Image: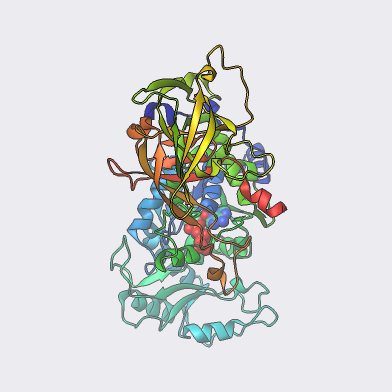
Length: 565
Ligand code: ATP
Ligand code: MG
């Protein structure tokens, strides 16, 4: 069974990539030979958290462009802030990019590799009179910056001599001043309508051990100072980022122009927002640290590691990235679209099995005691090559509690007193008696079966309206099943009280589930369709003899119905 279920989807599961405005820009640059025919992109995460589905969009875009144009895509860690960054994140990010199906080959870089080069560039700007050491503290810098409607004021240190700035900058580097006492700032224009151009800080004094450079530096470049030069050093052609950086583009262009170095082209696109979840790393970190979820890879998280643990395939995420496309204006994508992608993919590739999540015992009174039949079941009606398997049938079975109603409403085609239903791949049974405990709870059903109705046999022509799944009690394996729902109750969780919008029922743990015996050989990450219930995968919490499944997604979008009514 295990060999049958993680097979690749036909055609790699992917539709042809869609055209988008970025591809048009690249096509045009290739026509005009702007970068000697090169296409070189990068994915530049800051290692201060795990990657999420929004990053997946950016990864698919950047690596996808490189693949499409036979170019290159670098993986670069934007590790300029030593206080928030950790090796754990560096490792998880690499794992996630690889799992998504992309390869940076030998192009793994770190902004911290450029600390030396950035320092030289800074000295060059000071010597040109384009940067100066400023003694204002952080609050004063803010105060002098002005607002969107008012121009800023020049720092009293702006006109200090080049020699003095060079000397002070060198002493900053050597560690002669306490943290935060001075900064290096670009000398641009305090009256610029663009706040990013009002003498932005390039270096700050910060005694913090960096995850790669250790204590070599006590001055660290700001993101705005490091980012564009890192792209330039790597000779990136198309530096793709999200819309909020459009206002930073004039600054990045100013730096490379003043330095006279290679100039990449920045292109902005709209970040992915998804309903019923949050996407900022700061908030995701809070969910983890405050125990709302059980870690970054909790299957309810929109992180790549969470989605992976939940049973999402890399193909489904790539198809999702392609379906939502790339646009220039903000929008929010319905999470149902993401769920559809994984459903489509798993439908094609996952083995069907029978599992009962809330078992109700059924005794087939006219079935011989001790008899066991091996019935034939189809592994995947969508893919004949996945073959068939045998499942045991015997006198005592489990069915789903939901598949029996003592007082059935109209059009209830499952089991009820006196009614008939087909057991999938087996026989038609009829409920003859309902056994209850002292408190009136139903504990078991007595049924009879019609031996003439075995599935696949010549006499099985007799039809009943409903078919339900089941497992043989003596053969079933026990399992724990974790049922996940949306992490938030509101479509666009936000505001001060965003944590109050967490769905308290986002995880329901179902113990004592009964699954068909073939699943004994299932291993972590194996994926299945539990017939009639949804797609499930084996969680890595499983131990020999106690298997745990995660529900990836239900078979149909149950929220669509709820929202309509
Ligand atoms: P934060 O949440 O801390 O603001 P970030 O989301 O910008 O951080 P980075 O590590 O800087 O995280 O992101 C790496 C790359 O992924 C950037 O190029 C960024 O533009 C892109 N990216 C981040 N979030 C999204 C998103 N929601 N949709 C598309 N791309 C994204
Ligand atoms: Mg960022």
